Image 1 (cartoon, rainbow, N blue to C red):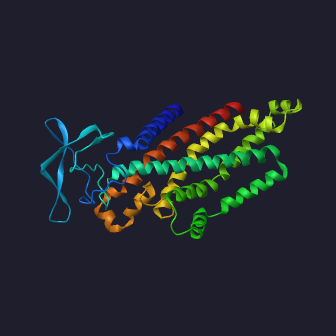
Image 2: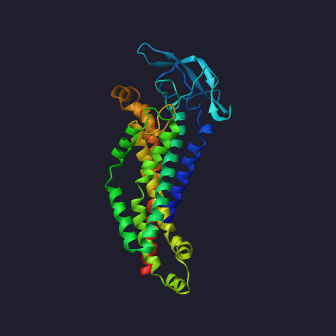
Image 3: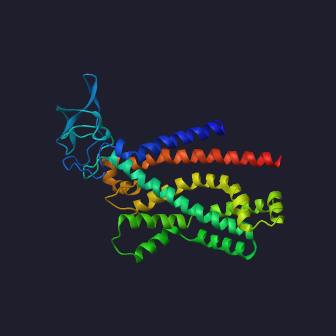
Length: 326
């Protein structure tokens, strides 16, 4: 498959997934906090057709402690109802991916949880790229002792175990912190230690741009460093920044999933893919309710989409460099 086809495929996949996640208030059948205490750990709902229209049956407990369908109670699936894409009238329920221990719809929580995980990845990436762009540009353009100091600082950050750093920061904070505080802490730690690789790549581009003919000519005409950086150097770094964004976002999404899974990120009741997976870490829950793994599976197409775009952009950058060398 050509680079252009891979790029289009990845972009379309990301577009569809982001629309579904960002539009969770429309695509999810329930709010993320809606509980159906009469249906904990309900299995995925089966869709039936009666009179050429989709319906679901009611749930009734069976002798094994699970559920069985009750055909005596039929609930038509209604579309574009209550400001949502689909739903059923109470007391009927529709759990396309089952429910959790509190009777909350897993599909709804996966869609809403994706907003937290995606936003964490995007904001942490923005923080890393801003730091990397500023540090890499300063190191490459000015050289000398600023370059040596900034690059040694980068090596120090690379050596830091960010998981233990987050544990240490969390240990000095109050036992109970708000969801917003936990979210911002997560972004600060993940983004604050991820700037090293972008800064090194930006530094390499800036070193090459600094010695280019048009920069030398502009410097000879008395152009100031701020003008040279803004007008000539920073535009040359944009392809590297764009490629690094597609690489870092999936990495930081996985970091959020891992940290929230361990209880170090965003906690209940606000869902994220990490804390949704935490319920599945118990063996009996995983064995009896495998649909609880849905948040982990939901992350796979998002990661594949970003990595496909990153791969296509990397190949394009390599092709441009080969053409320039020839």
